[in-house]
Structures are given as structure tokens and as C-alpha cells.
Length: 199
Image (cartoon, rainbow, N blue to C red; front, side, top):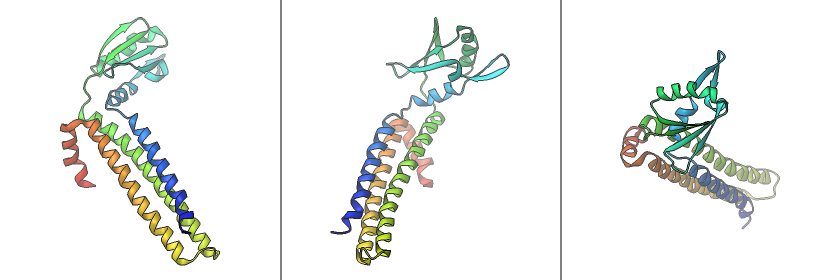
């Protein structure tokens, strides 16, 4: 069928978008909530504010509840530990390293991770929309130049809309599953009651 010439590209792009989105969301974890708090730490060095990432390197460890900060200059360790005390994380200084025990993240912290996930979801949905519009635009141009009939252009539009609907629902399903994984059952119920009823 002639319409397939236009829809195959859209379907290929949509499948690729789903595969990439699946990979991207695998990296999002509930432990990221505490990392956001750590990355927000600021210290003053010679009167200038510096971010934690400017004075040290945050590394995840094999234990997802422990992170390690490699401090570039050990003179900065007391400044950093003072700020870590303020966010009430337990830690241990080991030479140039600060090993931090991450507490269970709060609902608010987890919702920041969910917000980040939703931004990634919106980006994935935008890629699907772009794939759909590229195919329908090509078909419209072909129709205007009398390369295809109105019936073929309509078939392309209909098939692209169906694929867009299918793959968009797949992105939404993957996102909800990931949100449930991030929040856990108790917080997910709270999320459903508070957030999903407004969508």
C-alpha cells in the first residue's frame, strides 16, 4: 500500500523513541532524591559561594544508600561537613573522602524525582509527535504535488494518529510504572489521590 511508504518512517522513529525513553528512565531512581539535596549544598570559599560539585565529586557506591564525596581540597572538608550537618545526613570522613549514609527520602524529595521523570516523559511524547507530523507533512506535500491521492493522504494521517496514540499510551504506562517504583506503594497511593485526579 502506498501509505506505508510514509508511515514506516514514522513507526520506526516512534519505536526508537520508546526504546530510548525506556533506557533513560532506567537511570531514574528514588535515591536521586537525596543526591539533589547534596548537589544543592553551597559553601563559601574566600567570600565566594561554591557548589558542592565545584569542590568535590559525588560518586554513587555499590550500596545505593551510601554516596561518597571525593573532596578536591581537604581544607574544604570542615566547610562541607558543616553543611551536611544542616541537612541532617550521617557521614564519616575518611581522608579525602566523605562517606554519607542517605536516609529514606521524603515524599517531597521523591516528588522532585517524579517531576524530573515527567519532564523526560514530555520530551519522549514530543518526539512521538514530531515523528507523526513529519510523516503527515510529507504526505501532504506529496498530495499537493499530485504524487498521491487524497485517500492515500487520509490513510497516512489516520495510521500515524493511531500509532501516535498507541506509542503515547506506552510512554504513559512506562512512566506510571516507574513512578510507582520510585514512590513505593504507600506514597504512590498518595500521589494517585493528590496528583492524578487533576490530570
